Length: 261
Image (cartoon, one colour):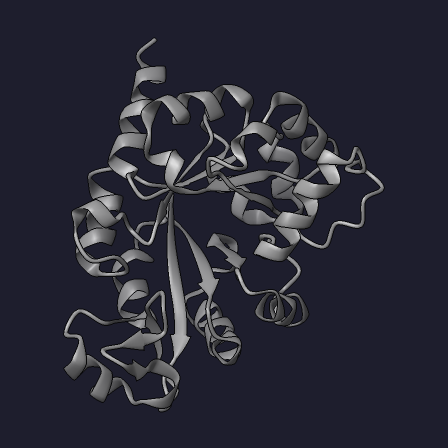
């Protein structure tokens, strides 16, 4: 595992994780097995029951300049960016604003937020919210979509780390297979990522993790396989840095099994 103490000198958010030798526990949209994702119910259970360290949330901007949490950007056929918050909440009574989430969870000073930006137009307002709530040292950024990711690179403060987009993840995996992944590789991101699925599992080896760590970057994993405790134990042994799971309760149980050894 990469030294979090060293990382925290550039990105203060890592200072939140200095007390643990295990990977960072991250809840993907709160955890779908508890109910609807990106809702207060799932976030609360991830925080209070699974004691997650990172809440991963998806952010869009409504037509009336409100930030809301939703993965797909469509609610009952209505596009979020084309409709008002009031209209969308009539369509979905559980639709959350970013402000609601921050009001509830910012007081928990140890909790970190991973903002997965789904809408480039939401970036400026999100940066304003970060400043308003004084959480610059409690945020990580990501965007699956490369153009949005590039906008984040332009607009975000240098002290907030950015995770690789899917296109970059695929290129990194291909470069590794071809023996081209080393310290001179033109990395664009502060956190390197891998979608751990059946077709990518074979490349996740100690050698890959060590190769990435030699570049001074942490490795984050996301994917359906990470809901399996056996896979969770495997990636812990490999020394990955961040595990995003849809089953934060299972991951917490896996972590506790290590603490009890």
